[in-house]
Length: 251
Ligand code: NDP
Ligand code: 8X3
Image (cartoon, rainbow, N blue to C red; front, side, top):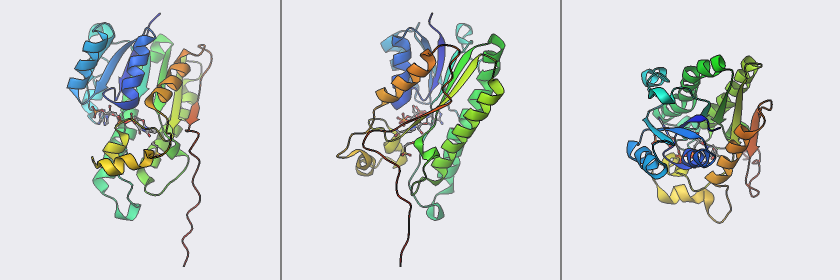
């Protein structure tokens, strides 16, 4: 039977692909993001029975705390929460970084994800079932130059997921951290480099990154596993990627 999912960051990239695939698999989706016109377009594309658009800035603590009560009555029992909304800003060395960018990454990737979970989790536990899938990153596991706060936010996602897993043991609620590496074709790099198209394209030039479809496939696999199986964390890289070398300054 179809379940009700709430996908944050459903206006673009992974979230949009995950929303489409959830609907194709027979579920219905509360599609959340700040760009209302894209959410409305998704509802028009897939139908109002399949998509409930939710204009939501995950950094708005009050709006998140009002969930799920602020949702239309028929959509309040969220079975699947995909905490996908997130961003990286810049690749500047820590000592040269913009504090406002750091704060926005923490507000979105850490506080937003944490607050969404706090709002939705009690209902799942009361119903004895539910799936929370958090979008982490390989950046949680492998530091790279200029990845400082972004990587730290994704390390939070990993540790929070594992902490939730411990608390939720036996409740029927599952929780997973999906950690992709290089993925092209989303707006991630465009956002990271402030709309500079040349810089945004560089990481994907002359190579074969993963796609949003690859990540969505993993998410659908996780939630489709038998109810007694929990994927704690899963790391995905394209074949062309590997962990970087240590940085050694000489001279
Ligand atoms: P996109 O930039 O394509 O999508 C990001 C989504 O997050 C958008 O839908 C955006 O919606 C939403 N979002 C950003 N800020 C907010 C906010 N304050 N409130 C609500 N929604 C917000 O990126 P991806 O699809 O590539 O990335 C999705 C997730 O996956 C992120 O958490 C990212 O860190 C992670 N990730 C990405 C990788 C990659 O290489 N692409 C690799 C590993 C992890 P809107 O602007 O409409 O609000
Ligand atoms: C996004 C992947 O390598 O740009 O999380 O940090 S990376």
